[in-house]
Amino acid sequence: MGTTIATDIATIGRINAVPAILQVICETTGMRFAAVARVTESSWTACAVLDNLGFGLGVGGELDLTSTLCDEIRDNHRTIVIDKASEDALYHDHHTPRMYQFESYISVPVFRTDGSFFGTICALDPNPAKLKQSPIQAMMESFARVLAIQLEAEEKHQRTEAALTQERAIAELREQFIAVLGHDLRNPLFAISAGAELLLRKAPDDKSRGIIQHILTAGRRAAQLVDDVLDFARGRLGSGITLNLQTVSDLSETLTHVVSEIHGAHPSRRIHVRIGNVQGISCDPERIAQLLSNLVANAIHHGAVEGSVEVSADIQDGVFVLGVHNQGNPIEAAVQAQLFQPFSRRGIDSPQSGLGLGLYIANQIALAHGGHMEVLSSHDAGTLFTLRLPLQPAD
Image (tube, rainbow, N blue to C red; front, top):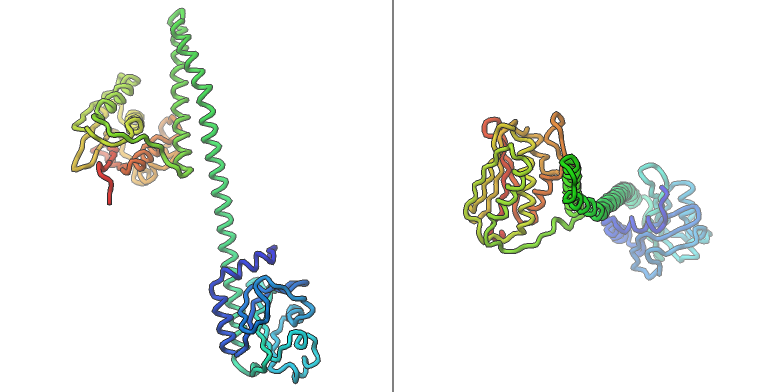
């Protein structure tokens, strides 16, 4: 099995049935010492002990293998039963009973489910006991089979736990790498954008300005991708989306500004805005703006070109409701179930941009605020993404 003695002791210690097995053995036989022992070619080690005799051996205690009868059991794989050692035909002159001063003794081999020898379940006492031609041997051999099954189950569980722990560690290291990489990319991107803005002010002709403007647009796009990667990494690492909560006197200005920016980048698209009373909302306005920006960009990218994008915001029954609606092909039910997962894609038949993190990050922002995202999509009604954020936390 490739396990160490210490590992085997720990495994036996995690099997809840072992103390009960030893207790039943002592009560049934009348013997006052019982143990589960790990027996190798060179060692005898106690993995579990019930000592009402004062024998003086605890868990992890070792005996000289040649001084025990378990060496014999390991070799011949047969149970040893002794009622009264001083009168036993085979063991009356044996050194083991004299050394450990016992008269009654029983020891059964324990085999793993693959047939390999693990050790023994044994019991002894200075007083004689009627063990032969009784159900005790069959009972202990049954306990040995139960122990073998429990050993396999516990070792399989530990292997699974170890594999999961390793996988979690690898995933965490990978996501930490993403976060560090994203953070370190910000500085050169800032330098590129700052340099491009300086060049734009001094550009000598329209052609140069067009090239520089393209650099600025690409730099801003790259910076947004970096921010998305950082938010993704924060969410996956368990700390979640960071918030700067504050009570916003009127959120309408923030929402309108977001829509205006996106419309400026897509002047040919129609975006209609309907904002009601959105005053006194406790939130992170920058994060809500980010959420809306992701939803509107998603609607423009996937919605029908000839259709309009409808943005609405209001407070309904103590819930802040922010919706983005577009016309176009409906989202299939199977795809809807995965929309808020990272790297989710609406389909492979249309050109894609970005990392597929926009809706995932929008959902993480909603969850961080104590709200949630919803999506409804049909052929007739189009697609509606909705943020619902209770103004009062749930009990």
